[in-house]
Amino acid sequence: METLVRLIEGEAAMVAFGECLGRAFAAHQGPLTVNLLGNLGAGKTTLTRGILRAFGHQGAVKSPTYTLVEVYEFGARRVYHFDLYRLGDPEELEYMGIRDYFGDQNLCLIEWPARGEGVLPAPDVLINIHPEGEGRRLELIAAAPANTLLAGC
Ligand code: ADP
Ligand code: MG
Image 1 (cartoon, helix red, strand yellow):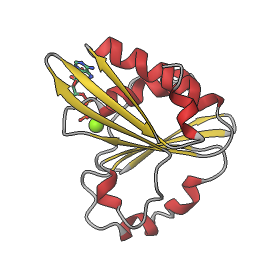
Image 2: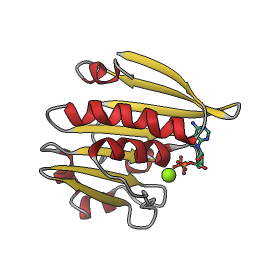
Image 3: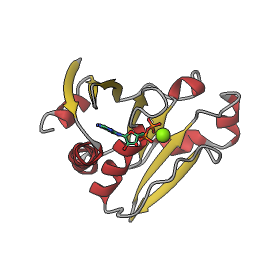
Image 4: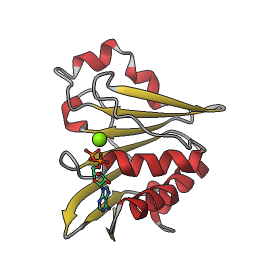
């Protein structure tokens, strides 16, 4: 288990850090699940915007607060961005057929994963975000082999 800690000040730096992570995730062969933990306003969606930018998505990233999940397609690769804040029951995820999302070359980024406990798979990478001063303290946790993805960022 490897833990990486980073202090990131400002939205632009958060997007840039997300881009660095995104490049590593994009280079990874196989499926990847990343849990994003932190309160409302922590910066989970901002980090997601940076990760998506590394895949080639230039636009805005809307929070899938009501739809629960937004899918971005990059050729054969898909990135699923979940926001489960308003999920009532983890079983709803079963009805959505989400088990199929966690395979192939897919990257799943999950805000509020605790809402889906029991249905969601264990993550490959866990990212904790806490406010610190004007910025954010990020704690990234990954076991082998996913820990190598964090090394360059
Ligand atoms: P969440 O998805 O966790 O609810 P958002 O990504 O929507 O949070 O971000 C909330 C606010 O925090 C935004 O206004 C964003 O600009 C700001 N923010 C994000 N990351 C940082 C950072 N590293 N330092 C300072 N402000 C940040
Ligand atoms: Mg969000």
